[in-house]
Length: 185
Image 1 (tube, rainbow, N blue to C red):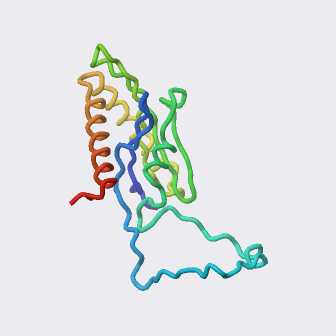
Image 2 (spheres, rainbow, N blue to C red):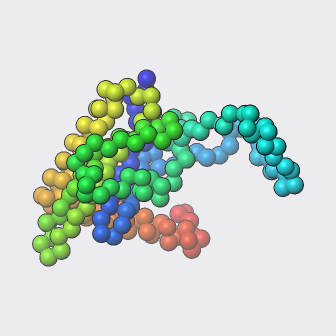
């Protein structure tokens, strides 16, 4: 059984909304395998319903080459953004052949006295759904410990607030470049 996670995801939720801040690995190679060709369907063809009723539905997988696939950043931020009620509890979600495990953490930023803020952070590990209970428990504990460390650093020096601002700014700049057609390079 594979103990390594398929992906590590960091999502924040605050008064400004939900945002995926970090995802590793970032992108999955979506190019077609060599030898595969794209085939355009005939727009005039008919689907025979008898065949659909008798054949089983195709198997859906969200694992491609050992990585998480099939989830956009927006979908992941929506899935893992939590409310205060779900904080400090075990978070587990299974979608197809992937199990997401985390421990949402409530961070109160009192470093900036004039504008205290509440940030809900969720550090999520994507595992194979067939992962053993002990592996799932280890990643849950790791997520919980990382949340405690982030909470401590936020209280100590406002680390999470500052880093979140930088990540959101970087995401927005890249998105603006793509909207304008400049690309990254």
